[in-house]
Length: 432
Image 1 (cartoon, rainbow, N blue to C red):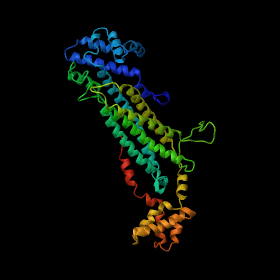
Image 2 (image 1 turned 90 degrees about the vertical axis):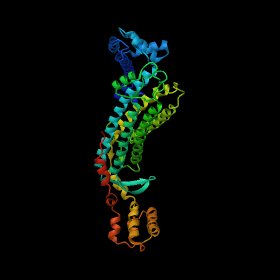
Image 3 (image 1 turned 120 degrees about the horizontal axis):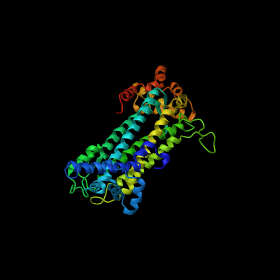
């Protein structure tokens, strides 16, 4: 991922320094396991443990010779081990190291992302309660529908974020596995006890039936989960973009002092963070497709997945990490124009209250079709003339409702009288 979209903590997790340290830890634990098995001498494990970390620059230079990254790493680690370097990589194949270390790194990345998801949830939940009673027009198909509240919009997104949190926990637990089972997963040169020793100390699970690798449905689940998180963010980013349109003007992204919205038009205040989140979601969905393609490998393994993963795994984590952080700041500082929301609600000429009138007429004994046609006729006149629907209904002889009943149908609070149940559910929700 380019530096522009890389935050320091996630970048450190996916750095070459961290990767080589994880490889070394796997190699060291395997030697320690061999000591526990009574195969390797204790001093060998101590020597590998105390050996210096492999230098990334030296590693790349050696790889120019070996044309194999793990072989280059093993050479350098063995050479730097004072005594017992011959026990480095004993009984292992490259993927024993690669996939086990990657399971550790992906678990670390997932844990950081879980923190980011919780931070976003906290902000969205707080602002949902802040705007619980901020009345606005609800829209379907982009057209006026019925009154809602901005807090209710945020509440439904908060629940989606909570589902993202649950999905990410499952994906983390699925991806956090290793394997020390050899070239085709038969444990021919390393007993299962070595694998159990290593994975337990790394705090990850074991692939119960591996080939040369851990299976890529796990990686696909993880990356598709990240794509789902990004797509949920895009859903709300799209909503903000629509509500910030000049003709609507109900919310807007914060615009700080000194910021410029356009190099040409000084008046511009664009929803750039929301648009950025939309773009990131597109990127993540593409990566998810690549992760799905990686599942089908030849026999016990080929390396058609390898180059893909070197790009999509770090980039997906970095992209989601960046997007979560940016959206958290966006929602925290989002400017909500409640007066404009009320103005837009009033500009509907009462059309958004039509269902209340429909139901009130049905309660008087009208058939549903008859009541619908009476209200629809006046609604179409309201659309075309700008006359308030309530005034048209009061003057309609076919409408047998008294004035008080008609007036009560045009109250926004009538439409929001049962939303407490949603906020009670939201209040009870917390992400551990």
